[in-house]
Amino acid sequence: MKQENYISVKTFCQHHGVKESFVYSMYEFELLQIDDSTEEALLSMDELPILEKMVRLHKELEINPEGVQAVYHLLQQVEGLQEEVAALKRKLDRFDL
Image 1: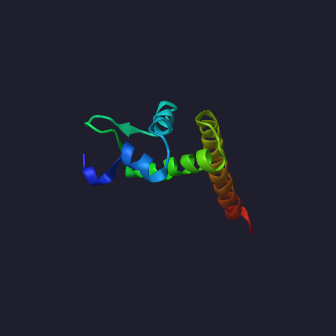
Image 2 (image 1 turned 135 degrees about the vertical axis):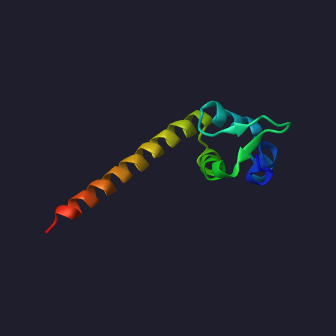
């Protein structure tokens, strides 16, 4: 495991002004992965954009962790539908004369 590809949960929470319990609740909802194989719990840098989006929902819109989970799943569905629409448009363009 390369240490530079990770950030500690504690550091993330201090920087973003959220409680560690919020990050762990996102982990419990299986919305992100936490590497707890070391002394300090670590977040992959790949997880940061997702977690930062969740923090914004939580702080700016005052959505509780359960609501963040619901919003996240809805956003995933919307993204999936957008990809499907784009694929269907590409298929239609092939048939357009």
